[in-house]
Amino acid sequence: LDYKVYPNPANDSFTLQLNDNYSEAQLSISDINGRTIHSSAITNKQTVINTNLLVSGVYYIQLNTADGNFATKKLIITK
Image (tube, rainbow, N blue to C red):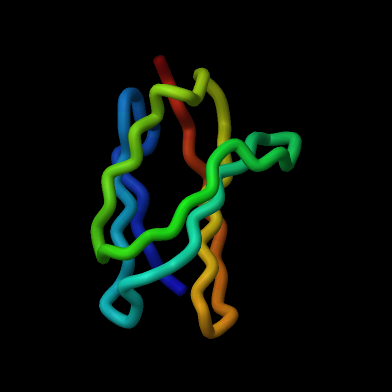
């Protein structure tokens, strides 16, 4: 599973862009302690995620697909 997260570092929002093989996935945002901060379904190849509820720091973005593929990327939030 390949996807892009930009801009990184992010401020008010970031864009999550899925590759051509997927158009749906489950998004999970966790803090550095592993606590899930946000979870939602992604139903478009490109989705803008608002970061108003996130404070400055390091987060992990995990995507899971219905066929069992998953990938995790690091996201830095600067406010």
